[in-house]
Length: 178
Length: 141
Image 1: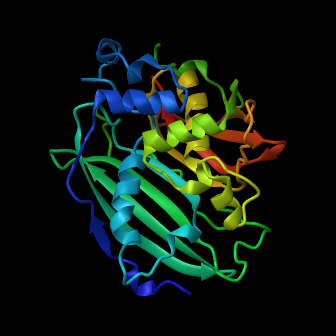
Image 2: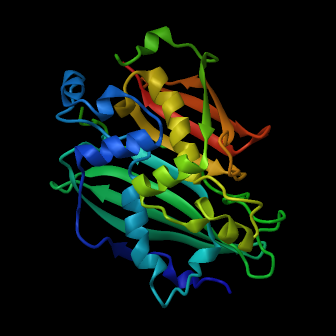
């Protein structure tokens, strides 16, 4: 079942804000096996010019996943989440996420298309801080594998697909908050 | 740790490699930390039902391991201003003590006039690449 292309352009604000805590950053760092002091030690972070510990570059996926919930559960879209695999992922960090941030996230549907029996859904999560300034842009391509053996390459994979964009963006708007 | 200085970096430089064993216990831990509880990452029955050979690692865990390669080299994780990957093959994680070895390598592909460098990353598991077009843009000192 093809996804409805008219969803392109819709946006879904995440429910509530996300309070970034030191212990959540530490937990995430431990889960990825990273012992970097800037994820754990506020004084080490301050000596590098940050107001508090900072988060690893992929930490924002937590907010992106939360923001995706509204879209995934939208009955109009009719997405079968058990068929969804992650095709690609990109982050642009306007500044590092840090403990103490209170972040808001809005999910934007940037693309819907069908290829080889699979639907490709491109979403973009814009994350802003309490002042409304941009923090992270997280772009995800989700592959919804077709019901008749779509996914094609024998048994499916964590997003085997051939067309994802891998934007090589740089922080687009100048100064990063260090 | 100190942020690496761009003047000491040349195109073609190799980053120190990183080898990480991914186990089922590690997947459970990552599921909890990230909030991604998709059962294909911890339940063999569900993984097979959807056509996978076995439990597979979260693509985002593999991406996070790739971030470690870059941040350890850069000296400051906050210097990563852009980071992108494609998930091209699953990292299959058997139910044993050894798990699966993920091997990461990277090199400086480009030094730019604005002070950033482009890193290209290769990730392999079980002899095959598992990420495609994996790049990080790092703002060095």
